[in-house]
Image 1 (cartoon, helix red, strand yellow):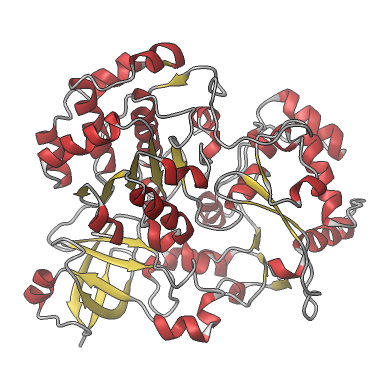
Image 2 (tube, one colour; image 1 turned 45 degrees about the vertical axis):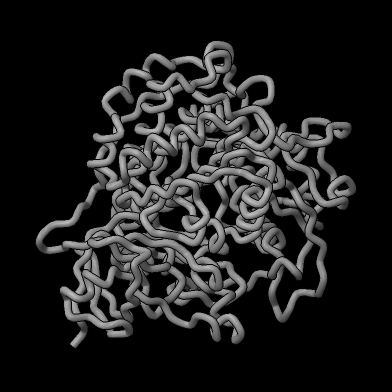
Length: 538
């Protein structure tokens, strides 16, 4: 993803949330926006009230599909064929932005050749969408003055995840929908500080602000600041760490604010690895399922018990002010890490969260103009290179980070696992409105549990009829990796041959079933497409 990150803000939203409501067209794919991102879903509704058109491309008939001008109900894992099909129509009907392509991009002829075969009819065979709807969706997106694309993990959690994102970028560049207000390529982050964690270098090949560890000048800068020699070898991704445990290369693991014992693919394998690792430390606010495997649990504080900053999905760095004192023996994350560092021989002098932030802005160019005082007014979106800079609402206004935006010709390939006689259904996963991630916090709320306290397997009534399954019946769902039992919920929001679950509930952990095969570039598991079988529980 390095080249793509350089061009498109390292996975950040190119535009800001408020801009959505002034878009002329909203294209949503791989995102159940109103449930997973309800605040952004509200902006989408405002845009529709303002007269915007909307295209939705999803395996399930989500709520927003009812308001869409075109709904493409595609089979899980066929996003890339669909995106190439839209671009095929846009090119054939001469709806491209010739000036933008000529002046702001390179490689268009490559992608033009790559999408030649993706006719609406060919794409319909792969995706299950109607050819006429594919054509109409392409026209709506390309003909609007300001079109924005919103997507989430329904695009990235595939073996083709990196290529899916490249295809989205192709679509935006071909129509000139980048570098101006209410347009852009906008991945919606799944947790409140995922963007901030990435900005701070919580990715193996980079340090802060996506400065590569392979760059000798970057290593020299940070080595001098930190008084240590930094390695030029990128670290491991989460999935590679668990493989490293199996191979005996990873002996210890330190997990902060993450619950892989519920959230990661192929949980039987994850649990065996957590059992096997020599030493496991978990730092969290509750005793999570992962913490139960730990040798040491370090109690951290919640957002309300600490000062600091969060960087949200629109790149907005926001100041958080402590509302209450830490409960019990809990401490802020930076305090715990500093104490551990000093116990093992370092001499770190971070007395407050602001001390850490002052170091961040000296080493992180995109944060260089920020101070705690400036952030008190509601936050500022990076890049903000100087203290007299007001921040950046949308990226790439004059040029891309790499200079010219690069088109990539990408080919559709089926998901790693498809339906067969033994496992005839495709399972896809997602979220619901009421619970958050692995329910570490929300499952402890009585009022939330009164709405939804357990998961269900959503399946098409025709499929259920074939299996003799009635609404509310307990079913056993099995993949090549594991099995679970859960109640069936009959709904026509999923097509025949497709079943859906969320990953919120530990008593029906859907990731026992999901596939851990990876996108070769981003190393993200194919959580959105797994072959399963379903039968009525005895």
